[in-house]
Image (tube, rainbow, N blue to C red; front, side):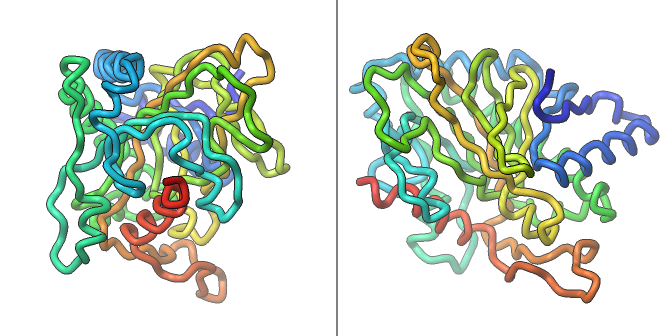
Length: 327
C-alpha cells in the first residue's frame, strides 16, 4: 500500500506516449497532495547507499567529534546542528518546543552573485564544513548532491510540461541554484517529550521541490491531506519521495500544493527506542530568481494570489525564523 502516488520515471526515455502519461500522473499528484514517490529515477543505488552509510557513521560518532563541524552560530546554514537546535514550526509563526533531531547540512559551494549584502552572502554562500571522519564523507556527499541536482532538474522539466509550458521553462531560474542537502537524524528517545514536541514540527518546505530518502520501517513522516487529517508517508529507499515547496505553490497560483508535513513521535515505546535517519535535497532556484505567477496559472481575470518574491530572500527569512530563537 502506498499513501502517496508512486510514479515510475523509467518508461519516459525515448517514449513520447509514456512521457505524456508520466506528466499526467505528476500533474494529478501535485494538485491533489503535493507529494509523490518515484522509481526509475536514474540515481545509482550505490551512490545512495554510500551517502547513507557515511551519514549514519557520522551520527554514530561521539558528540565531541560531531561538534568539530558544528554550525558556528545560530543561522549559519551548513555543518552540524545538535539536538533541539531548530524549531520548524516557527517558520509558520507557531510556537513549540525545539525539534527532537540533529542534522548535518551542506550547500552549493558557489560564488555569490554581484550586488548582494554581506549578510546575504554569508547565509547561502558560506563554506561547507566537512568532517574528517568517516573517511570519504565529502566525496560521498558531493556525488549524491550532484545526482540529486540532476534528478531535480529532470523533474522540473516534467513539471513544466504538466503546466503547459515549454520543457525548458524553468531552466532560466536554475542557472546557479542554491540548493541544500541535509541528513536528519532522530535518535532514540531517552526521556519523555515535552507537550507539543515532535521530531520535526509541522512545516512546508521553502524552495521549488524536495527529494527525500528514508529507510524502511516506521518513519513518523506524515502529511496533512485535503481532509485535514495527518496520514503517514511510507515509501523508502531506493525510491525517492518528492514534495513541492512554497515557491512551486506560488508559481502555480495555488493550483499545486506546498503541503504541511511533520515527523511525529511513534506511540509505541519500542519504536521510540529506535533511531531513524533521512536524507533530503532541497532544490532552491537562483538567489535572485523572481517568483511570480506562471502565465498558464493566472486566475480567469488575469490576477495572481501571491505577491512577487525572490528565491534567496524567502529562503533566508524562513530559515532564520526557525533557528535564531534557539541560541
